[in-house]
Image (cartoon, rainbow, N blue to C red; front, top):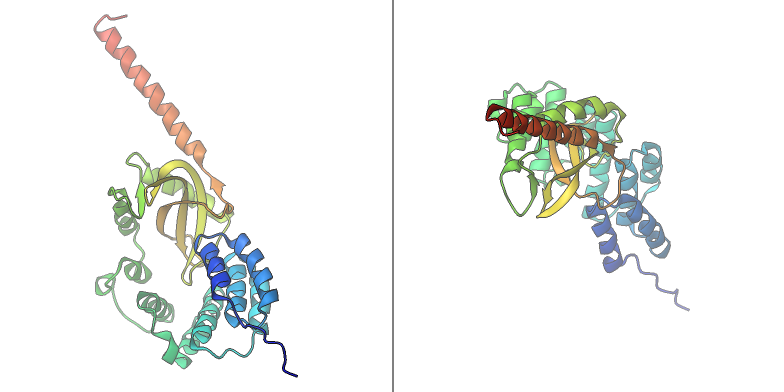
Length: 278
């Protein structure tokens, strides 16, 4: 008698979960993954995705438990996924030499992600002091910041988000960038981190009508810092679809609006007084 056939995966169901993950709906994605893995327990990619979400949310202990329990990784795609999760673990724990050696031992599947891989290797070589370059030698903003961090370069980079564009990220013209950055620097140590990238950590801040994302008005900022530091690499308007934890800095916005109103009334009064219009 033949054994009942059990499918290893369902691309349609899994695709819907990846969509949740792409929208930063991490908790929803976890819930759906748990249901999915009961139906498809042999789907290694789903288990790797499950581990990844725990890492993003900062539950490194659970992440390691899941990752260490995974065996029979056969496909190139799953091997690559596993490798990048191990890289995240090494970088998070500042185990730079181990990370560098691990990549070298898996070099045949590493250099396939373009800028992502170049950024990781440049970061590691900088940390291990095995390259001697200047920011001028680097082709991208992010690589320049890795080699030598510059606050003026950060401001120049963010300025592109003030250029009107219906697609992508746009700050409103009156967004007080430097004032907000100063406030964010104060708030970062208490803010909730999300480890959604190998080299950066992200944080969310509430600031009403900050700008638009693909033409839609949004009320949040997403701030990126270099991993294990509070050095800001960029900030963007953000649509908090996943209802993630955030720090509210709207008091800064409404304080500015209140001051503006007072200033405007004062100017009107002075004008009336000057020309005897009272």
